[in-house]
Length: 175
Image (cartoon, rainbow, N blue to C red):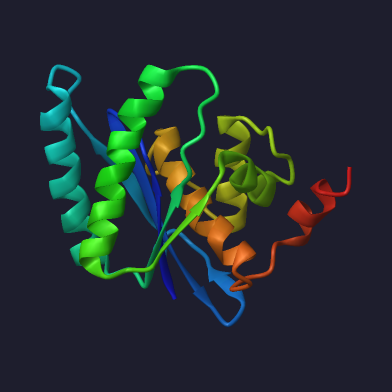
């Protein structure tokens, strides 16, 4: 099963696609597709959304995921940021629907808990654990958004019962 995880953002949308097969995440450098859709900071909000829509549509068309997973919007403090990220999420929801792909959503805390065993993990912890889970010995990107996209996809594998979490994560959850 091909799972595309998408991390919404105003300037950058991170994505990561993994494969789950026979209860395991198919690991390795060549099996993972990850990166980011970046927009120009000088563009208007509507121009950024158009770029995101076009590139995300192309990504979904070429990657052909079986399902799409994204992060639920949760902001306690900054309403302006929440609205802008909400617009980006709208693009994600629209492209998933147009592609006919089932869509699943998880909170940031659920994602952090599944990836690191700790619901308040930071970006570096997420990146390092994703590398360990995916058995990646190199980084094709330094963008946290791309690592978040992979983390979102991995989370669905675990929570949907498509893969079993490695023992090194299960041990972290027993604090």
